[in-house]
Image 1 (cartoon, rainbow, N blue to C red):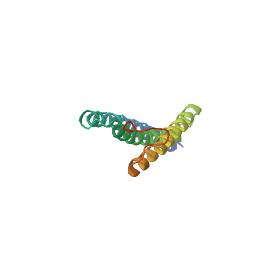
Image 2: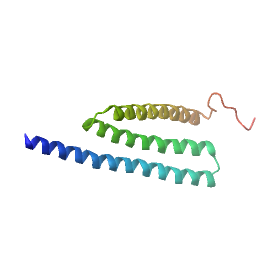
Image 3: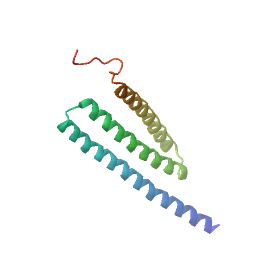
Image 4: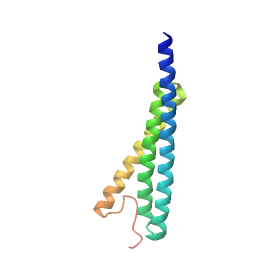
Length: 120
């Protein structure tokens, strides 16, 4: 039985380090996305493209955050971590849905519904 306790502690410790690593990657994704988006805004001056580009980086960051939360929830499933996991999953789902819609409209060369062109 002491071997199982040791293995569990080893697993929890490994998951904690992996969670920290995944959260760090998430922060790095947001930072990279911000820098590249600002570059697009400054050089191209296309707010729509910049918003779409930054949204993609946010979606990637949320994927890493979701993975980190799934890991921590598997070894310590309390109500707070389950709620956090559910919230991140919902945000990620909505963000990906709207990014897909925006991409679809960009590929078709259309304005998204509810928006009017400034050039009319």
